Image (tube, rainbow, N blue to C red; front, side, top):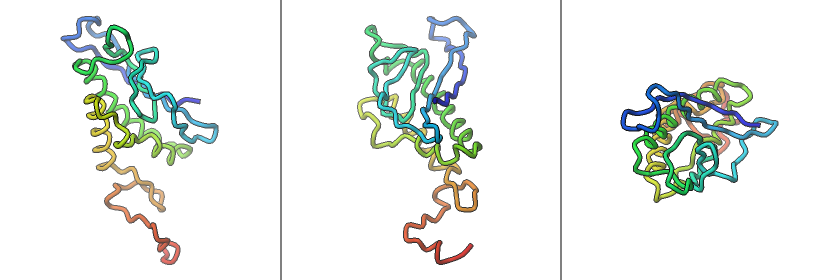
Length: 170
């Protein structure tokens, strides 16, 4: 099954393809098993209603009304509209993390939706900015689930890789 998070955005002034105040959507789609574990998507292509050949290397699908090249295989990297969509996708990603954190069934699932920076395609500036923004959010936000059931910022946590917590009680 899929968990889809959606946000509505409005067209930019310089984008004359769309009517003023027309709602356009940005979707992030996450495929989960029946046990609510994230499925690593094999098709990491960007969608503009249909799949493109633009590989994002993200562990989820991004779908929106992107401005595409004439062959509909890639997005226009220099498009302010496409940059705006990815800025909105960052905010939607943040909302999605909060959504997963609040759901008991998903509280550990969302770690799998965090993009790995080393997988970011180096030749895609628009994706590099997305990956970096997501990374900054993850570094500064309370996303580490502690043994006490609270979420904390990673730098404020002790990661017990030696098994000390089994010797020392709370």
